[in-house]
Image 1 (cartoon, one colour):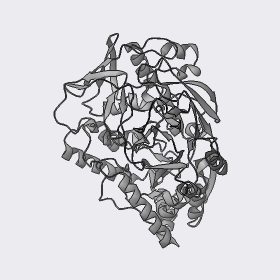
Image 2 (cartoon, rainbow, N blue to C red):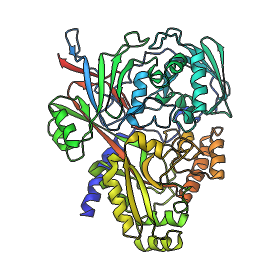
Image 3 (cartoon, rainbow, N blue to C red):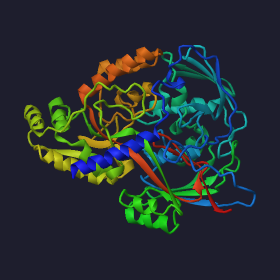
Image 4 (cartoon, helix red, strand yellow):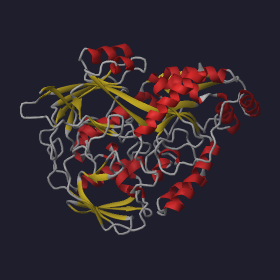
Length: 552
């Protein structure tokens, strides 16, 4: 049976790899691979228009508007979307403000200075263009026709406020992306200057993700909760029922291209059978279903489409290195040799999972993946030997999980029980989990979570392994790795980058702060006639220009 399952997984992985064909192993220009400093980049903005169409199993736009659209074509005014994780607050400057649905919602509400396309390039959004001569001092020229949802005019002071507020929000996902900038000032009302600690070619990527959207200072001063709902984006958040649903309405005063759909509701539906029924009866127009129900929609191509993409992040079993037991490398090695990652991938995602088959801890499509690091394979006897050398003495080890990951957690529990480790599972919703396992105060001993690996190599380890970084839930702190992360900013030569990143991967893998298990293959079911969503290997979607054709 395990051989059969392995064959199925290999087949799925091959399909996933095909979805990534055309990616370049060399760093994109935004990653600092160009030795020639630019003078001016950017240009005119199309108002957030989506990139050109790609096949539905690849990153890019899902079902672009067909050429047959005419004035007689009728579009739905409202779309219902079933989300996969709970959202309790909208605030990327809070440790509780994280998760796919939260970050996707930020793209609806906020505009960032630049926008990261699925192909790795960055295009202007609130900025019209930038100038830099050395990759260290950056001047951004801003649009002059933008207004916030509350009517305030967007200016350079909003950019400075957002940067300052992010740096004060230690442990937040926004802080981890804005803190590359060490100085910022408003040159005039529509010009800002940023300075980084060293030449840094990835700045556009950092300020182009959804959680670096520009905030409104007055709105936040007046309301510390709903003030974070105010952005300049294509949609307004008009209602949020925590851990239940979000409702968005189109911003008819949007400066850019106006979306077709007037409103969207994103609803959390935990029960798998309910999600399937809602999609089948048309109550919802798109959402995720279980792997076992996916075939129902594959068998009905006249009514449904399925979009899949391999995420760059690896679902991982993480250790809190501040814990006396999990901080013991012998204990971590015992766990690493005690688990079977292929089996865990099956329990985690079924046949659509893409198991991590390399030894390094690195992103699926991130350049400079070290092929020389061999994976740790299950070896029960070796696991028991490491356990005997560790400080473990029969204690119950807590495994914190998001409630959707119960099957994976139970499989880990069973496998570790086989080598003599007693594991207790602690499930919780996403907002509670993100606070409980915060990088600034992780209360768990072990946890399952995604190793957030950027497609830009400079950022890949900074967000996960830099001290107090938002996704450093492992509390990892190796001074040698920290120094190399800081040096990454100023290494521009491709050969030097490869040597640098290979060495970093060797150091981190030897420390074993986490065990990567599988790269998630995101599968989204959508009703025929629905399109305009944009996705990338970051597993985030852009729903601003989603539509549904209901006639014509």
